[in-house]
Length: 130
Image 1 (cartoon, one colour):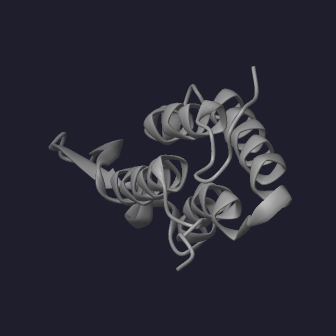
Image 2 (cartoon, one colour):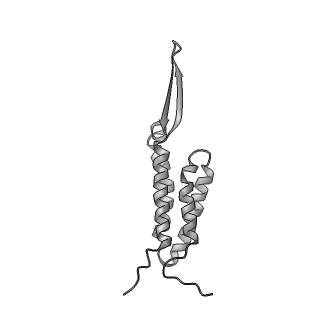
Image 3 (cartoon, helix red, strand yellow):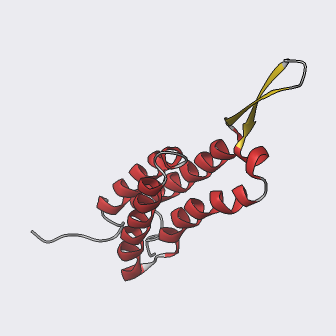
């Protein structure tokens, strides 16, 4: 009958990019990255490391959701909308990574690279005439 035009190498790489964005969000929220040191009146020092979720609170969940939403964007594309959404998702992810590279952006570099690979893959069922 007809072939499934939704799944192919391009779509698989886009799903991998989404999985990497989810992994980046989880790491961003759970990896200890904030340190505090306190000294009491007796001179005893205590040091503590906190994850972003512990240090910032629920607002960190909203920040983590942004790159995941960007990574989901290309998966909505079918037909002619597929390539523009893949490009838009990669551009938005690149902006997020570059703006946050000194703090949280590096967690999403793998998702950005996978999204860029997906942009250059040919969708299933299309053929180029030479």
